[in-house]
Length: 140
Image (cartoon, rainbow, N blue to C red):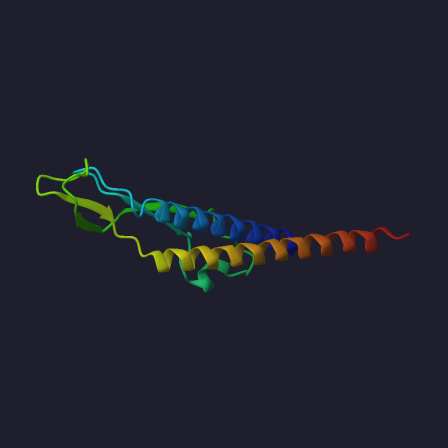
């Protein structure tokens, strides 16, 4: 049924945006956390099974919904600061931090938050339409 696939697509959108919010929050949280010597920080990002190809995502029938989005960890590029007093400093007094683009992460937070709100509105609208259809179909 078309309504079921719309509900499934909305649920997918909600989960995808929730994971994007979680990943961006994680990346912001570790931005100023020193890496232990020999250990790299892991930045998080979210991927959808179909990537950005919309045609393959909707399938031949137009009713396909992708499987669950996935949060993936990748090694962060490091930035180094000279602070010999830091316990995480190496033998040269350099401390490694993950290189996090704060502007990009904050933009992701705002974008994912707005997209999540839009998915909630779509879900609520569809729920209201389904209930209204049941009222019409039930008669009085």
